[in-house]
Length: 371
Image 1: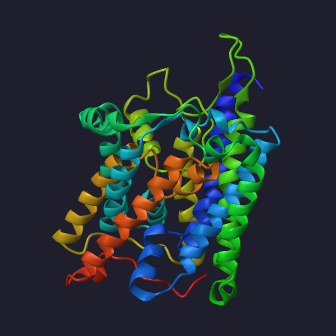
Image 2: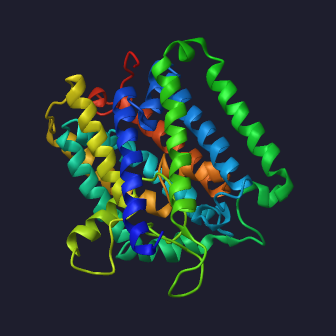
């Protein structure tokens, strides 16, 4: 396909994948912050196992694409030799705190917006502004000079096979994905909640499909203009999959600079609109669509602060609970593992801190009966 055609096909494919994601995420209550809350406060591991099953599925499928030569994960920004270890840890902690204050991460707020939650619109606006300022504005200065500067440049790419040897990729990926899947499926309550099982598998498969669309369909061996290889349809000009922080900033930029011919609707931007549309469709079909707004000034404050923290933390850590937690981990990037541990730690600490307050039930998520 020509570059002009790919600039249409890749974003449309992203929209279609995100449409399915939005439906499923709304149907199952897929939410990492909710999963941590369920475990910390109620001892309910089912949503956590759904998230981990999505990671296992994405890991197995994504590594298969690489081993079969369909997608080159060496081109993905997650696996770059520069390991920004301090940015991953600090950004992840800040993101984890922020997503708890905002009642969910970026993807959860997109899903809630599709269901009529106007609080999520405010969160996403704050997240987008903060993310853009962290990428290109005033917050980029401390990020680059104080956090990114502490990074180390490795002699190889930062994916784990880079440390263990490329020959270890197949068995390491198979062993890790199998171990994660077996841990999830070993629980009888989780297996009995079939919606969670299906949700974990399908969401993981959607991440794999995202890699295929950007890393294979959108990949040109030879750009007609530069004669170099090129990925069409992504903001990074590299293979990407599902992620929900930087895309909010890219969407704001596109809407504000619509007449700039250098800007295009991309795979990442399409993910946002597809997720909202999918959640809206399911909410309407299930009779669950309802308008919601802030219950108090404290509720407004928490969501605004949470959105701002997620924007800064997500860009600094180069991803969110989906961007790093599923897409990034599926590449076996060390930075992704550091980020997701930091995010979960920040979320858990904040959940415990909020639970000690009288207004905690209005802030933290609670487990549902399951799909």
